[in-house]
Image (cartoon, rainbow, N blue to C red; front, side):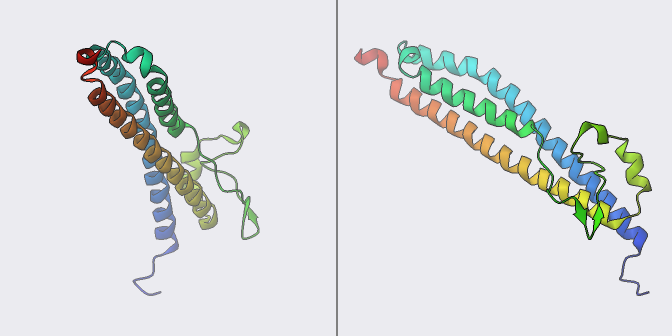
Length: 171
């Protein structure tokens, strides 16, 4: 065997490490979304106070659009935490997959870390790696959309403040 070709144990260990890293990344997206929800909701009170102090009529004129955009942002951030879906294929090369990490029903949940250490099938590990990679991409895309909506929300708050800064002087 050539020295630059990984052994089967090295390939299996690599796949296990990829699975662990991908799981960590998915958890980090969930944590970022949860922290963002809390920070975003807490920022609403001072922001609303600033807008209503700039123009007392702001509550009646911008409330629906502002609150709709706020609720949309919170829902998009919460959507990041929702689970993703695995690939539809149940078989790899004619072998059915067991669902080590991503399981389709609660009855399949087991101690995955123990099963992962004992697993010697590259096909199973590759399937789980691809399932987790797909879930990671879904959560990444959801977080990008949610953060984009938050930037739009804050941008609209700045624009609303700028438009209303002379509200008291003209009215």
